[in-house]
Image (cartoon, rainbow, N blue to C red):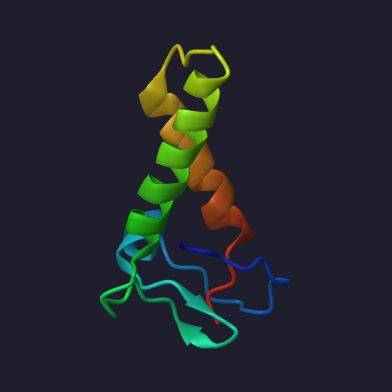
Length: 85
């Protein structure tokens, strides 16, 4: 299972969202890898996270009106909270 840690922002440098999505996820222990040992990018993490949220929404008999906008807002939220040190 993929996990991400939220830490207080300490970095002045903030890459563009496009660049950030291509960067590998890094937590306090180093780069996050999947079960096969491949490093996970932020884009892969966001896709995983959004998929899990969508499944929960559908499982509870709700539906998203605009899935693309939903993904964009979740991506922006995670990007804003990310620490890129």
